Amino acid sequence: MLSVRRVPSLLDLSVALPPFLVDLIPHHLPRLTITHPHKRMAVRLLWMGLALLGIAQVQAQARPQIPAPSLHRVPQQINFLPEEFQGTWYVVGLSGNAFRRANDAQSKMYTTTYELQGDNSYKVTSRLLRGDRCDTFVRTFVQKGQPGQFTLGNIENYQLQDYLVRVMRTNYNEYALVYFKKTVDGTDYFKITLYGRREDLRPELKDGFVRLSKSMGLTSDNIIFPAKVEECIHVQA
Image 1 (cartoon, one colour):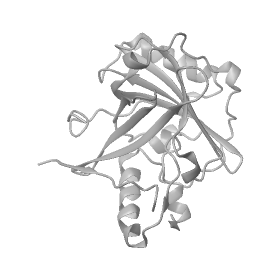
Image 2: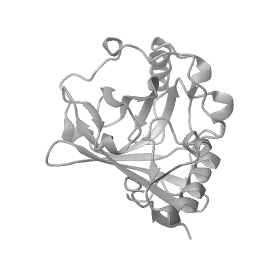
Image 3: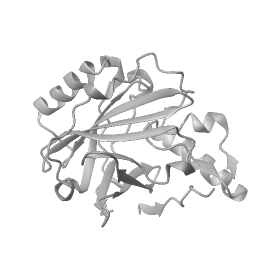
Image 4: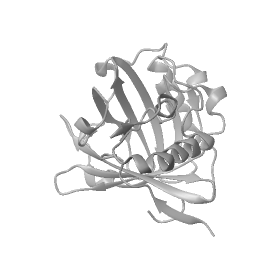
């Protein structure tokens, strides 16, 4: 039977992750540190599991050769509707300057659920299949600037200089395109996610995602479509 496990909060974990494990963390998720040394092994196994899933990269991340686009080139959804956007989204497509099709060909589909809070922030939960278990990652996106743009809550607890999330386009009931950018040690890593309310999207939406990604300077080698899985992501978050 598939077991469901919620990953403990790692915000208050004092020993830094080993460098090779830091490189395994998906570039769109915040970099984490550990404050409870006895949890180090559990965290190591967790990130190794993510690497096997294809969600994290197995090899150390080199500095990306493709720069992040200036924000004036990144579209933003007009008249963003926070309540309509909340709910569960399937991660149908991924592109970014740290992705390589050859390395990420075995990436597995996962889901991300946005829960609107009273202050217009979102509680964001990503649900991943790891072996025969479901792992969940929870963080907070806080509105920054215009509606539909966010930063990471409690960003001071992460080794990040900046973290930006921008909803680029969405019709709320079918698809969404979301831009993520984090800055680490002066280097910008960016990613575009194609979300779907269902696992399958119309071909024209996937084609539009590819065209948009390339307009941001990415190539076909930086674009992947994670494989569908039957377990975990169908369980109610």
